Structures are given as C-alpha cells and as structure tokens.
Amino acid sequence: MAAWRELRATSGSPANPFMEPEFTRAVAEVRPRSRVAVWWEGDEPVGFFPYEKGPLGQGRAIGFGVSDSHGAVLRPGLRPGARALLRACGAAVWEFDNLESGQPVFEGAATESFASPVIDVGEGYAAYEALLRVQSPKFLRTTLAKERKLGRQADGEVRFVFDERDPAALRTLMEWKSAQYRRTGRGDRFAKEWISALVRRLHEQRTPGCSGLLSVLYVGDRPIAAHFGLRSATVLSCWFPSYDPEFAKYSPGLVLHLRMAEAAAAAGIGLLDLGRGAAEYKDALKTGEITVYEGAVFVPGARAALHWLGREPARRVHRFVRERPALAARARTTLNGLARLRGNR
Image (tube, rainbow, N blue to C red; front, side):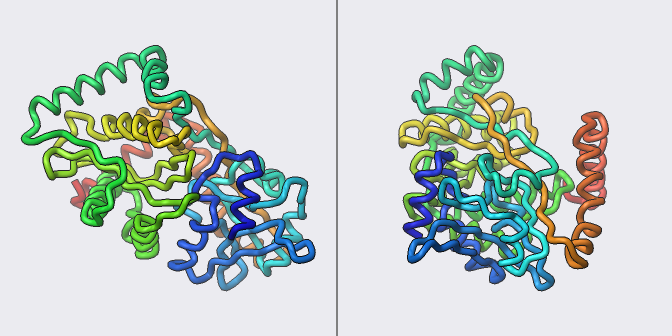
C-alpha cells in the first residue's frame, strides 16, 4: 500500500481518492470478487491493477457503477499490453466507465469520452466567488439571495457542517437520494446492499488519501441538504448530493455546494470534482473540466463475445440518445412519467 501511494504521488495525476488503495480495500470488503494484480521488478512493486472479476472472466473496474475514477497505478514508463494484462488476470474483458486521463494502457480501448466538471479553489474561495460573479452572475446572485432568505425565514439557525460524523445524517441523505432516484425513474443505487454498505464504511474511514466526507446544511437540528463524497489532501470527489424537497424553494443543494467549496478551500483542498454527467448546476458552478473515458478491453474468444453481445447493443442505444438532446429530454420525461405511474411521486 505504501508503494501504491508513492506511485500515485509521483504520477502527476490529481490525487483522486477513488484511485487510492484504501478505496480498493473498502470495495473488497463488500465485493468479494475484487482483486489487485501487482507488477514486480525484483523485490519492488512497480504497478497495481485493481479490478473485479466475474465467474466467467468478466472483468470490470473496481467499484464499477459508483467509482468516479479508475485505471491502473503504474511506474512512469511502464506500459504492459492491455490484453496480456487481462490474460495474466484470467479475465476475458475489462470494462470501464470513468477511466482517468493519462492511462495509455487502456485509452486505446475507449469508445467514448466525457467531460467531468471541476471547481478549482486553489486560489481560495474569494477568488472562486469573484470568478462566479463574472461567469455565472445570475446563478450566484440568486443562490446567495435564497441563502439570505432562508436565514430570515427558517425556524432555527442556518448552519453548515463540513465534516459531519453523525451516522443519522448519512441515513437521512441516503433516504433522500433513494427517493430522488425513484422520482426520476432511475434505479435506486442504495437499494443495492453492497453500495449502501460501502458508503457506510467509507463514512467511517479516515486516511490521508481517501476519507469519507459528509457535509450537511442544517436549519436548527434539522438537515435540509447533504452531500457525501471522498476526499484526499487536495481533491474532493463529489458523489451523492441531495436535499429535503420541503425546502426546495431555497435551493439548499446549491447553497450547500457553495459552502462546500468555501470549506474545502479553507481545508487546503484545491479541486472539487463534480463527476461526469450533464447538469445545469454543474455548468453554473464549474471552473473547468477534466476528461474521463468509457469502453472495454477484450481478449478474443467466446467469453468476450458473449459479454460484447450482452452489453454493446445497450451501450450504443444510450450513446445514440445522449448525442441527441431533444431525444434525451423526451427520454427523461418518459422516465419521470413512469415513476409517477408507479406512485413514486
């Protein structure tokens, strides 16, 4: 683990907590098919490849479906062949959906790239807010006005806790998020026990490279917005935000993100990674973007062909819809309508 951390520190990549050994270890505690391949030169480990392996050799990135950054951790200049790597792991395929930039072993297998919006607060929160006044003036003005209005009208003191350790607050966030998934017709991630267990474990984890961070906006003792993510010394990976719909008119989620950016800057965190996926609030908050990739590496054979047939048609349909904004909007409307029919609103 010390060698892993050292390789990451010298890689030149942002210190994303999803790429630290502690995240892989946490996933392994709830996903028993988790594995790590290790390269050795003599007695020195010079590379690590975390992955999950299915019973038929289907491989995928560690924490696939929830991890916002993945790939191999390699000594600079180490370039194993992707297929040779999979053969050594006994895997027929390795699937990824948030491959970080600077992964030459796998980037050739990427079929799509996505922008992941980020907030740079390396120059301090005041500099970030000054940028927002130029870049997103209406957004900032409206959000700050709603924060002041909340302070005047709320039945209790409005306060923000950057690092909330109370597990009850985490349970509240997970309940809000599950309800949000159902309202919007999306699959409830927290209905999967391994994801719920992983989040609870990470909330308790305190390590320099990967710690769970729960931030909460309160009115009195009542939480009205919350976010759970992972942090390293310099990066906060935003993960699960949600809020109490009763307070929607105050935009508590947006207020929360501004306070998170302010507290992160004060704590020495220079970058907040909002994660891939289009959203208006991300466009308003971001100062820039990084790129992540989606795709798969295949070892020719029957097992890889079966995996391709099971996954690629659906992937192509999703891509077709994403590339057509009007169609994507109709798809979201349909999902919301189905959710209403199921009685989730």
